[in-house]
Amino acid sequence: MRAKLVAANWKMNGSFSLLDKMLDVFKSNLRNTSCQVVICPPHVLLSSLKNAVEGTKIEVGAQNVHSELSGAFTGETSAPLLKECGVMWCIVGHSERRMIFNESDEFIRSKTATLLKNGIRPILCVGESLEQRDSGKHEESVVAQLRKILTGFNAEDQSRFVVAYEPIWAIGTGKTATPEQANTMHSIIRKELQSLGTHEVAANTQILYGGSVNVENAKALLSQSEIDGALVGGASLKKDEFYQIVAAAT
Ligand code: PEP
Image: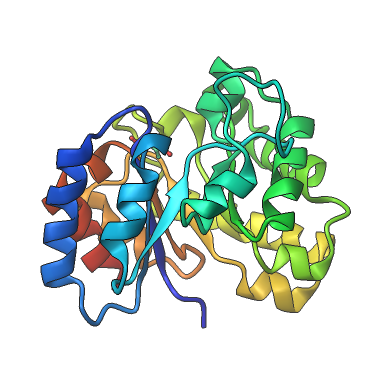
């Protein structure tokens, strides 16, 4: 039985005060949830988040990492330093990083390897463009991304991954994949994970849906058999809404 996981991707938003407010809501309400909760704020908030979540079920996530361990990479952050900040999870392969910062599957693959070597669990994002979906190429494009990034990792590595299916056309647009569309793609992803690793690992891998998840659609998406949680952008910045999405997963 896979536990549900809901992760917040704050992107370049949020503040120390939002962190305080968010944690107030979660600390008073989130006692006995079976849902894993991960908050991925901007890097400068990571240490404060780590201190604030001690003793709670919330885990600390980062939004980005460099593949190298140190060096002349102005503005970047290394996996060992993230680890020191209490980071247990890191998003890789987000479509905004692919499109705005030109990150290739190869670079995403090397970041993933670095995260694993440093004991940080990757939340690996894959997803198709609107053009790919409209032309019926959505399944092959998602499978191709998975193969380029994951081929060669062993079963133990694969047991550390979470995959997030994020159709690009649904991110920040208010358009959501229907629960059926998402569930179908999640099954395809799981099948691909089986062929890249072992059936057992694939059966236990959490596959999250991301793309305009909100209070209204969370329950329907999260009740699908293959949807093990959500990666939430915009709605994760609203404390009560994010809390209700977590509650819908519980
Ligand atoms: C995201 O950025 O991963 C995301 C899913 O954003 P939103 O929920 O705003 O669509």
